[in-house]
Image 1: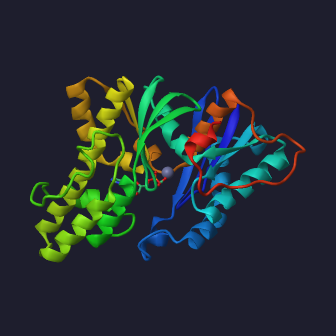
Image 2: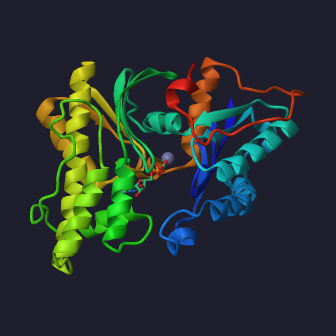
Image 3: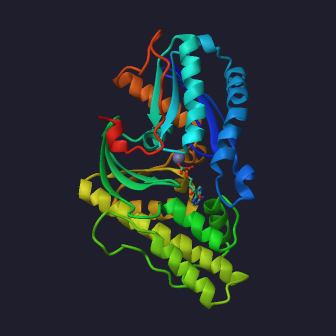
Length: 341
Ligand code: KG4
Ligand code: ZN
């Protein structure tokens, strides 16, 4: 079973080939970070147009690199949502066009489900059941995962996502887009503790998060105090420490709540090395295992889409076989819980 996976939900064009027997055969990615950098964030229309330019050449390159032919595909998968409507449509239209021409099933994949399952691409892969900490630019969720398609939401952010908190506070510090990695780099040169930022909802006892207060607290610090040079690095370190501390504490609480000993971290913020280090310390102290996707699979990519689709194909059929209608939709807003019903 050979699946082509296409990711175009935001600012990364990713394509990959996953084979049921041989595993991931290859994946290629184009990131639009430079395209959007001047604007301080993703410009949806520019994103869509760039996906149009990149997607087919990337697919050709992937086929060349892997030595596969389109005729060998058993299915084409794409990110159906959530994401930017125009960007999603590029992947959806391409996938459905290819599927129709080749007479193979086309699967719309939930972007968060793909992130959630991406650690299974690594070795050793975590066994079910596990708790997943999903930390991307748009979502911060804790899920109990009992199998493919079997997800229970344990807690989520009430306002900003962790990635958003990184991005917005990075912007306040005058760092470029994307803010998360830039803030992490600056934080590595500073020391936490000089500034006293809140750890939002740390003591709430629940599994929900809230990060918007952190942004306001950073703004207050910047307005009231001169933050330059070493102080700027120390503030970045404090921001990172505050976000990471909350994520680690809530992940631990979720493991206790679920009675599980395996934690899987997925989504772009999962690339943060301080988060990885703190989770490793907590895992040793509290006797649980942590699984991370490879760094390249933490942020958006086509491999996770191809893989999630391959997992899905083992559970249910693709949405369309040869000769069916040509209509399709994308779902810019899409709750994961409704994706699996
Ligand atoms: O999963 P992802 O690539 O896209 C979404 O589906 O949202 O996550 C992107 C988010 C951005 O907010 C970015 O700033 C953050 O992940 N991110 C990081 C790091 N690398 C990416 N945040 C903190 N530290 C990093 N090293
Ligand atoms: Zn993502």
